[in-house]
Image (cartoon, rainbow, N blue to C red; front, side, top):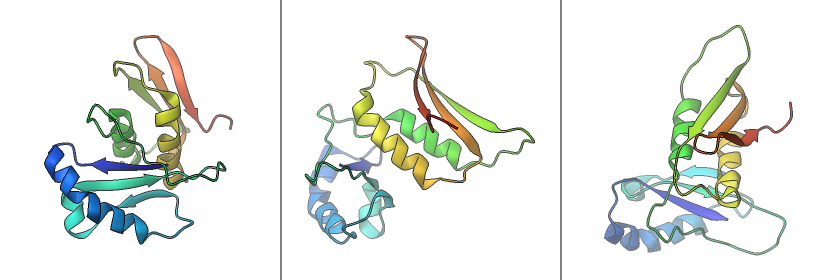
Length: 147
């Protein structure tokens, strides 16, 4: 799966105009690449990153397109911000992400991207990351699932 993360205020027109550059950028990536690639050059004015998740299904590439026009989930942005900060503690640190988005997120869409993001930061200060659905008062996701 390939998900293109656009900068939040990028217009639909600029996103559409960037498609040829995006496809060329993706074509230049290694066939075995998986994870998060930060865009560079002129493309970085429109595209923040590409998230590439590979499965064993043998199909692809599969592009994820959000038909509502919202091309990133706020939970991913918040986790990414938290992973980039410095924390100091003598005890293990765990991150709790409170999720309030409506309609509720679809786990099969967000979890692969969240896993890819967390794998990029292996060795981060967080022993675990928890995503909590505030409305339904339940834990939606724990990474890693087991210690």
